[in-house]
Amino acid sequence: MLKIAVFASGRGSNFQSIIDKIKSGDIPAEAKLLISDRQDAGALKRAEHENIENLFIDPVHFETKADYEEELIGILENAGIELVVLAGYMRILSPIFVKHFQNKIINIHPSLLPAFKGLNAQKQAVDYGVKYSGCTVHFVDQGMDTGPIIKQAVVEVKDDDTADDLAARILKEEHKIYPEAVKLIAEERIKVKGRKVKILKEEK
Ligand code: GAR
Image (tube, rainbow, N blue to C red; front, side, top):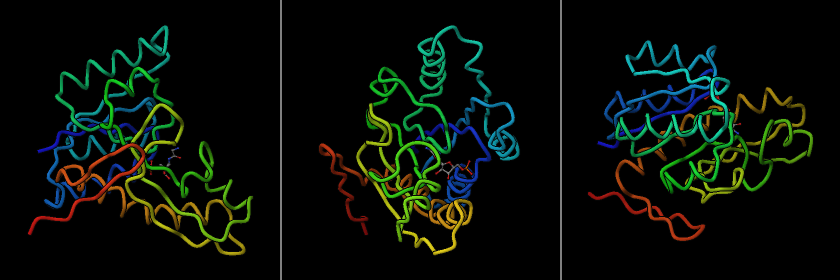
């Protein structure tokens, strides 16, 4: 079973959607660890409730980003983590961290990448006036929100949408495609070639 660690900075609803599918036997993986950079993250409470080891690691306690990430790498290695799932983790990982776990880190972003990278993607979409937005699950590479795309879902933007309206509609889709992407990886049904991700058919 694929051993996964989830990094989350906030409420953790994507984390929850993945562990629910693991618990129901849909995803052949084990959620071993939840790591947060924020003490008040709802994700920590969810992990506690699910009996999943959870750690608040305060970046402020480290002199440099490299020291902070070295600590993370040590924890992940000790736990034998095979996939790092970023679920609302609001920090950019350094190239050293990314290289260490090449093609073993995935992220969900609330837009149809490559549009609206970075913070407040849903507000960016509303402000720009696009008619459709959505969400993207992708491997993490050394850029920001630039890695090979695993899955996307499209969501309509309504005329009177606020950023919060759109975020809520997108979140529903996030909760579908993120567990699906983790399942594909756990079932070893993903091949990455350059920027392209090929999904292999399910064995019958
Ligand atoms: C989600 O909408 C996720 O796509 C977004 O943060 C939210 C976390 O919600 N991530 C980013 O914007 C990353 N750049 P959650 O804590 O309920 O899973």
